[in-house]
Image (cartoon, rainbow over all chains, first blue to last red; front, side, top):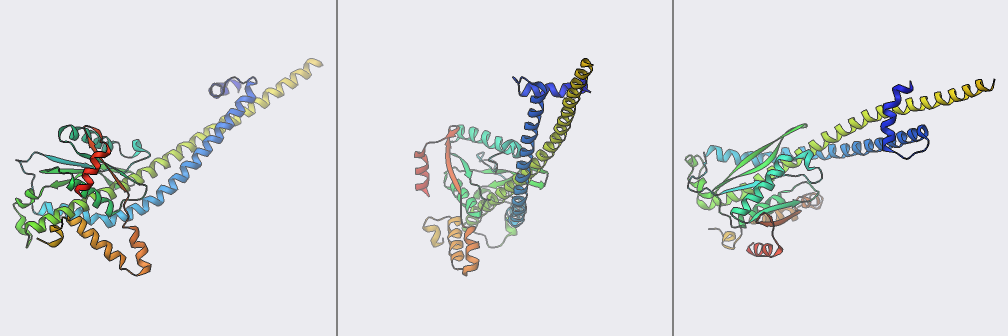
Amino acid sequence: MLGRVAPGVCQVVAVVNHQPNRNMATLKAISIRLKSVKNIQKITQSMKMVSAAKYTRAERELKAARPYGEGSILFYERAEVAPPEDDPKQLYVAITSDRAIPRLTTPNSRSFARRCARRRCRGEGGSYCEVIGRLPPTFSDAAKLAEAILTSGYEFGSGKIVYNKFRSVVSYQQSDLPLYSQKAVQGAPKLATYDSLDSDVIQSYMEFSLASMLFYAMKEGACSEQSSRMTAMDNASKNAGEMIDKLTLTFNRTRQAVITRELIEIISGAAALD
Amino acid sequence: MSAWRQAGLTYINYSNIAARVLRRSLKADLRNEALKRDESHVRITPWANGRPAPRLNKQTNSSAL
């Protein structure tokens, strides 16, 4: 029995070294680890609860925000807007919502944003990096962002909003929304589908659709973040649970081993006296 | 051309101002909820040459607003 326990014992001793009494120290080390893992599990569980609540809210808000984005896309599709070939300048807006756990939530979109910012700036100058606070995004946020893009003085022919599209609780996908300049929209072949459009109306609509698409992309991002955070925390709790099981087993075995050894010592001592 | 555009506002400004007025004119019980949607928590940092630009740039941008 002692031989079987030995590998596990050695591992734990390696963690807490310089202990004179091996078995006692091992037991103590294991119980300390057990306690810390249990605490971690408690933390991840409560984080999961928090993000589950946030996720339900984000999903509800996403449902309300969806028409903003889909309506704009539909307009471009119906009017068959195409990016102008004579204007190669492109605007990329990368929307991501992660702060604390970037690796878990949005590796693609974030690194894409960084890369874009670098490349854009070297070529044209004047890209923006946005920091959004703890609260879920509002339309005013999107409006401010759109305002900043419009006033940045960068004349783009076409462009893309890159964001994380929420698909289900466990998955999201990096996707993009199209952006066009006013000229591109005015030159669209099927613009006549829409009634009473003059350049003023189109300009106003372009501004509004930029803001609403940004809003939609932000909401999608926020929802993806919360859902993947929830999944990640759920996984972490599960892993901690497995670890606790293993540690409990090791702890019990070690305790048993200690008792057995003490008994052997006592009995053999008694036998030696006889 | 409409008056607000002549004044240098974009449609976003215009509709935001309209929305704010509407929210403020709501009844008290609905107003509190609506005012929460009016808040914005965005900080905008201009980037140049692959890194965040100093404040100087920001001021020129905000004056352009």
